[in-house]
Length: 328
Ligand code: ADP
Ligand code: F6P
Image (tube, rainbow, N blue to C red; front, top):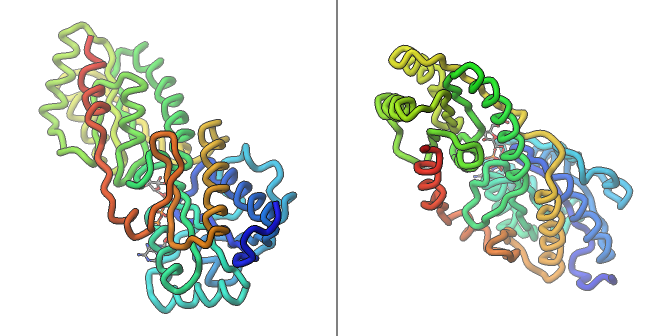
């Protein structure tokens, strides 16, 4: 394809915030779509931190070969507190101008979108692509990495269930999600957990949890699974209480960062690739200050400010599923 819009001759791409499987597929897509328009593409390493220090590398088609199947991000990622301050944001915009970056694609979560918005306000055409295993971006039903992370967590929980049922134990599994319970919710439905604890819900008391376990035991259940989102915490305390009151041996497993790694699923590779194309198409149409989303089978885009104001509720049907489907 020829250079459809000579306005954007150089595109920058960065990953920012927590990494997520599929970010590499998005980088590859941004690079190759940019090149297909005849633009130059550069990678900014380590998110906004790398932008401030001018850590910018050229990216040719070959530089993104063999990465679609790899977890993590070849551009590295970082958190950069300074970037919250206007003086550093101005320095970031200046740095874009120094490197001739006319369009910037930021792959990250809500925090990264706030940084992207600040750069857009300073005149840099910026597009956000949702990349976080937490799925906690309101404008989209899909975020890069969630599908891989939830499948990784589910596989691990299946293994825990094998040993938990052999020993007739209660397993308490903490999954990632400091402020969001989507991984916990999906894992709970996918593995038939008796109880799920989410940061979005009113905190369940130990008494309610113990009562649920005793009722399930009275119905003949021999092993129990409780999935806890990281943001809820208190897993050890809960295990101790359950064991103390019911006599059921209880064990805690914290899945931690293994959920952020691994080769991305086909779902993550597909959406990341298409979102990369969508983002570059937006830049080439002259759009700025937008974020890409996916909803009801369509890729969409929103003004970053509007996207950041949106609120996401936990789906009622899914919550109901966690309450009724593990009862026999
Ligand atoms: P995520 O993008 O996964 O939500 P963070 O919340 O850690 O991750 O944000 C990533 C980075 O985005 C931060 O380290 C910072 O550099 C930048 N950022 C976050 N919030 C703001 C903000 N209000 N203004 C400017 N930059 C921000
Ligand atoms: O990537 C999102 C997330 O995994 C959150 O669920 C978690 O709270 C956070 O990142 C932890 O990230 P880190 O250990 O890198 O600070």
